[in-house]
Image: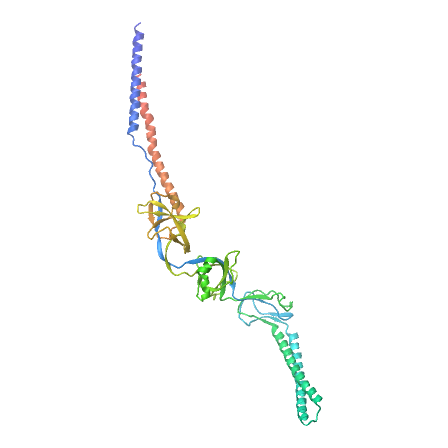
Length: 434
């Protein structure tokens, strides 16, 4: 009868011991967690390229697109009809003024010259006889040996014969001109196109005849473009006062402007539909590399040299209708700054308002900063920022962040494993005691 009460009391004591030990273990684990240092996420300060605003003396330029045009362009057409018996040039060759390009069969025209010459000789002979007869009549009329009527007839015959000589001379000159037209010569020096009508073909004369070839002058050459009204009023209108407005020319395969010239002429009216006026600039082309019809970039200047602030054009951002840059203060903190931009000077953009000399701006890495953010500035010369390097910097920052996250994970996992282990020890001891 006394066994069961004794066993029950021992069991109660054992259960109470287990509860006390478990409570102590939990309290210890809580204290261990409370003593563990809190893990804080490290703040990453972006590293960006920063440059100081450039101040220098510049001349304003306006850029336009245009086309090259020859100063002289000729469509060579025949002035007499006939068969082409000779083509004396190679397609695309350079020719000089007076060089023979085509020859039309001259024999019919030579025969016409001979006939006209014979008619002139006959007219001169008749005019000589008529003149002698009239001079004889003048002597007779003084002695009243000839009637007045006969005298007038001889005088009229002499004058008519003289007129016939002049007509024969004109016919001979016309025949000689037509004979000269059988040799088609270059009217100007330049580059000839291909022969549109070749040897053996019959051609007709006149302005409606098909052109035999075309010829364009080489040097100098024009660049034609349309200038807006403001540029015309500010710069190009000075042409009327005989001042030379400078222009520069660049081709499609060039990044800069390789040739310099001047404004040659300006149209006499402004196109009201487009608000532009046609302008023609003149450039030397001694090497013949400029060909009519090529696309041309033309830069027009004319302002007096003046001081200006310049920054890298790639550093300028767009916020709807506004332009802005990120300015870095002496504490390496970023600030938003709205700016007014002007023309390009190389790869630098003129800033009309918004910046001051000595200001520093972010030129590379603008996508990694925000107004008010702290940065690590890497100072570079203005204009040397490379926008293509930004993704590399982002990858490096991402890799650095991944390393920090990995390190954090390594430090966190052992703590996570130690908590169950610390809690399991009291339970194990309790089971052993039991």
